[in-house]
Image (cartoon, rainbow, N blue to C red):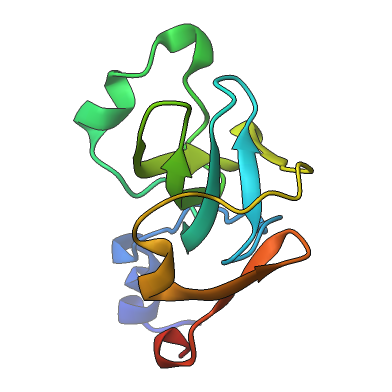
Length: 125
C-alpha cells in the first residue's frame, strides 16, 4: 500500500497547460493574418504570457486562444514601426521577400537573406 504522503503529493502540484509546437522561429519574417502588418520574430512564448488586461482588450470575435505559441515581433505597417505580440493562429509566412524596416533590427539581427534574419552571435544562447 502507498504511503499517505505519496497519495497527496500530486494534489499540490501545479499543472502546466499543454504546449503546442511553434511553427515559426526567431528571425522569420511573417505577416499578420487579419491586420496585414509585417514583422520579424525576436522571441517566442510557448503559451500566452501577456497580461489579462491586454488579452481582454482584443475584440472577442478575433481574440485568440491562449494555449498556443505567441510571438514577439519587431513590426511595421505603412505608417510606423512597433513591437507586436501575436498568436500563432494569426501568423502567416511573408512571401514578399522584402526586409522589415524596424530601427531595432540591427541591434538583434544580422543581414536579411532568403526571407529571414540571422540572430547576431551575441544574442544566441
